[in-house]
Image (tube, rainbow, N blue to C red; front, side, top):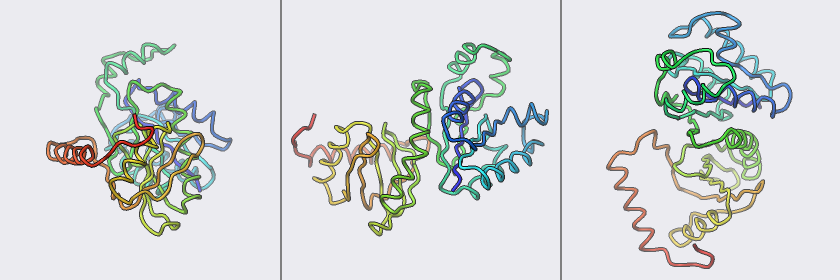
Length: 275
């Protein structure tokens, strides 16, 4: 089944560089749809609501879905202006969408743009295009910060495009990634192996995996399995009913989270290898 990788962000964030790197690293017959190439080079049309480029974007998305293993959609892609395109993407690719958004400050985009070999526009133009936290909302987007490097971004996208397939085969599931306020990748979906909804966390380091597994075992019976995969560590949990909390945490949710954390500290006892 064809997979769609969406890479979005404000001008100067690094999305085009990342998209080209991913395009080179993925197998042949991967389609790269660049907003600037389609709109400026191919059609020479202005961006905005009801842009004349939308029909071609939609046709290219259909072509990629029918003929390519991977499709990369890259650009500023204003969430409101390109809503029809994202709705079509959701309809075509479903859970096989891997979306990423450069959530970085305006000052960082200026710096990154100035470091390019060719600087085609200035700060005034970039500020006029700027739209902060322009999330799609109905498609979950993994956020890249100013601290993440091109190498880290590339490895995360490439790993995600294969790790979900491996997890789904092993767990007989339909996992998809969700946003989570941690350094770990998290997935939810239904597992035919366990006949229930599951919550899966992928850890880069064994210590984090081991600690969470031991703590969870002391608090409840939600741990279903744990194993290593591609030099990472995977924890499979049941009945967590996780939800994407969106872009902001209000005071009520923060208080509720604090209560849960306090309960952890009261109940959890020391165990071997804890740090």
